[in-house]
Image: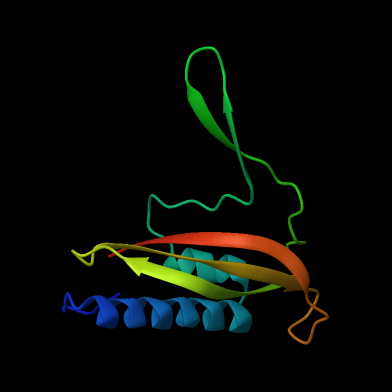
Length: 118
């Protein structure tokens, strides 16, 4: 994101535009390529999270269940976006679908959350 203003509505609009650019990039190239183009150096993609406790500490592990095939097209739509007042951190969440091609047929894939850092 490149907006210098701290106006919450402007920041949210920029976030939604950035998410749309991410989605368009994924449709043209691939989801994997889009993630590599947009993700932070220290970012990660968790297909599914399982939270649990062991005897020493809390842990988070990724579980590859219900994942679309690597060749599937993934499309998503944010249902909600929030931006921190400082404008340096934001998130979107929404629904995702997958299909073997851009023309479908699309089937429900799940709910996603994207954390954005400026």
